[in-house]
Length: 382
Image (cartoon, rainbow, N blue to C red; front, side, top):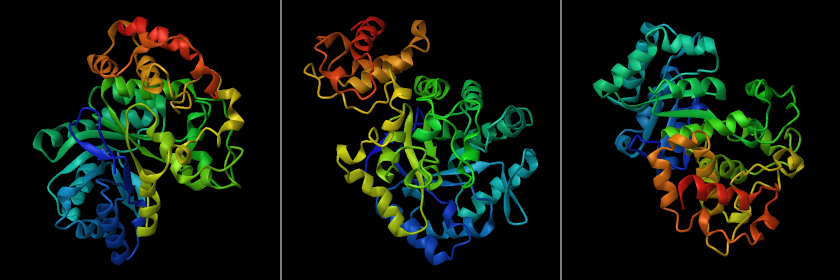
């Protein structure tokens, strides 16, 4: 298993995480088997958004004696009505359900206290103008949560959340289809089996800029909807010329700036093993570019950090240098020190480029890599 820092929180998460939503309404034996399989395969981050008492108690029971092995994402504002999950912007209700979460999980703290489902201006106001965000800050001061997070599917709204300065990390929906969807589309409607994806456009600039903003601010991302609710794996429902594999979907998400972990939903130990198998895949098996090649022209000129440009005769890690360049270009006059340090730590910098063009010949998307290396050398001074 590989581990990555979750932004500036000081916590490190396994690149494969467990989304526990599929354990809702399952017998305890199934919950225990799945939770223990994840822990035994060195998965150390779980997302628990479901508000129902039974599933929370089952997860808490399965974690007994192993709580210290896992980072928990618990949501503030996830509630239920008639055993169906709902959202509350009432601070008193959110407080009651969060206290229930602690009690049912048999723990006195949650690692990431997630402000739940902020997808619109109305959602934003419902969290930040009602006292719910203030409640999260209070919980952090009291030690009941270690870091404040939020969940969102909308890059414009998520950007507003990051800019409040309150959140330390986000859970965000990332997959290649979502990243290529026009910004005015509701990505969640595309998970409906009766609806089709809109025309895909290449990497949507707002989403790409949002990932870079998170990296720049030190706000870590954990990923939901990695597999597009299974549509991306289906020859019938994929918007691409061919379905992707689980490994390709995971690798795409992990290639985005600021991403620490992908939260893969599983309800059996076999599904846990399928997700963890990513760690043993070859570079060729992880490669997602062929599967999205039908949209090659839409990607024209955009680096997707796929590393097809390697090897570089000057030993430049071209994808990493380009990633830090993209982040720096958000505000060239105020490049964060952390981004400079990451760039400086590279064994070879943009200035090492000899303009041989070998990378450009291999790039599937026509990126002007030589120009990018020149810009990186100018911005970072080396």
